[in-house]
Structures are given as structure tokens and as C-alpha cells.
Amino acid sequence: MLIAETGTLVLVENEGNARLTTSAPAVHVAVVGIEKMARTWADAAVWLSLLARSATGQPMSIYTSFITGPARAADPDGPQEVHFVLLDNGRRQLLGTPYEEALQCIRCGACLNACPVYREAGGHAYGSPYSGPIGAVISPLLFGRDEYEALPHASSLCGACKDVCPVRIDLPRMLIQLRVDGVRAGRLPWAERTAERMVARLLRRPRLWAVATRLGRIGQRPFVQNGRLRPPRVDFGRDLPPLAAKSFSQLWHEGLQGEK
Image (cartoon, rainbow, N blue to C red; front, side, top):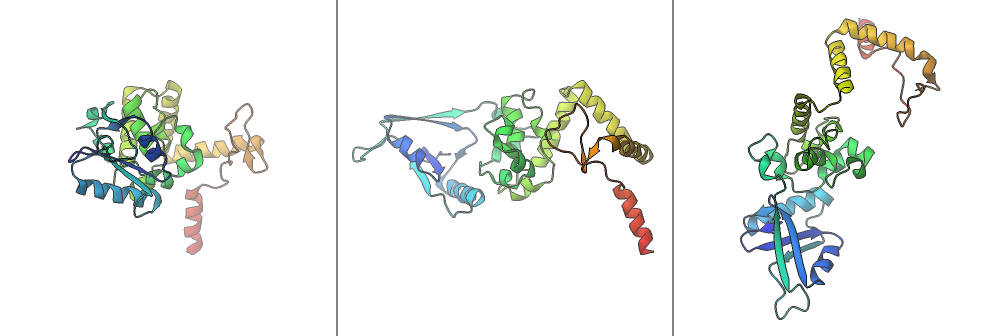
């Protein structure tokens, strides 16, 4: 981040690589998002405390460097020139929108550690420099919703990301809003929209849903092998469990009757 009070660049890391790469070259060019600016040193101190605690559980990161201008005459090393490039890249367009809250992110990564989808899929699956729940929100907004339309759907909406976020960004709300925007803009494929409408109608009609699941249990029988569903000519990338013999509703009513 940048501290506006003194024009100081703050670099936070645990390896020492950033300190090495900013000391050796003669010219240091730092590209900083416009949302990563603190007014005063007191504001920066709060930011640093939140960052280390939420990212790695440390009181402070091992390497926290403060760079205020080029090397002085008495400095043994350091750049001869220091340049700051403030990056907008669509950030100001989020002001006043339902997604403005995303600009509060301090990049601690706490939401990634808590997200069940990220833990299973990993960062490369997001196809963006920003992964996890915050990436599923930021990537479509900054790099184009058409290219990253699928990311807001890569969430179970369990809310764990909001619970662990040190600045309480409501990521589940924004993920839902991005899905709504995608549906309204017609960015979903026709086949997917049609399938979702059909399922929505079934879910609103318990009797039809019961009939559909009953037919599904009957139709799946030839494709169940060793307790797994293996439809022909369809590769889901992993084994799928078959539909349960009884629905949750049936088990619930049977349990109530047993208690009586």
C-alpha cells in the first residue's frame, strides 16, 4: 500500500524477495491499485495488523518494508529512482455500485482458506490473478463479466468467507448479485437457462418434484455400479453418487411417525 502522509510505499512479505528486488535495481517502479492508499501512518498500522493476523496468524509479517523515495547518500544500497504508478483499471467504476464494498479487500487471503470450493479446486482453476471468493467477485468486475461469467457460480454460498473476512466484506451478497446480473443480461447459455427454469418449476411444486425424483431413481438403476452412478457417454470427471433410495422428506416423516 501507499501512505499518503509521507509518500511511503509499504511492502509486506514473508520471504524477503521483495526487499531484494527493490534494493538491487537502479530504478524501482511500483504499480499500486488506487484502493491501496492509507491517509496516515496510523491508518496503515491498523491495515498491517489486520493483514498479518488474518493471513498467517502473525502479529506482523516477517518482512515489512517502508520505502520513502530513492536511496540517500549514506545508504549502502537502494534504487536511484522510485516511481509510483497508480492503477485504476475499472476500480473507480465500482464506486456507488453494489460492488463498491469489494474495494475494501486487503488481500489477506482469509476467505480463500475458509472457502470449501477453493480448497478443492485450487487457485489455477479460477484462471485469474485473483482466486477464491474475492476473485470470483473481483475478476468479472475488473476483467470482463463475459470472460469470467462462471466464477460467481463457483460458490456454495455457505458464508464462511464473510465470517472470516477482517473487514467484513459481504462476498455472498455480491456473488448472488453477479449471478442476477448475468441472468438479466442473458449471458448464460440457452441450454443452461432452460434447464434452470425447468428445475425451478419443479422445486416450486413438491408433488411434481416427488414424481421426477421417483422416475430418476427408476431410470438410474441400469447405470449404478458399485454404488456409483456411471451414465454412458458422459464424463463428469469424477464418480457421482446415485439418488438416495428415500428423500429427506420421506425420512423426516418416517422419523416423526416413529416418535409417535
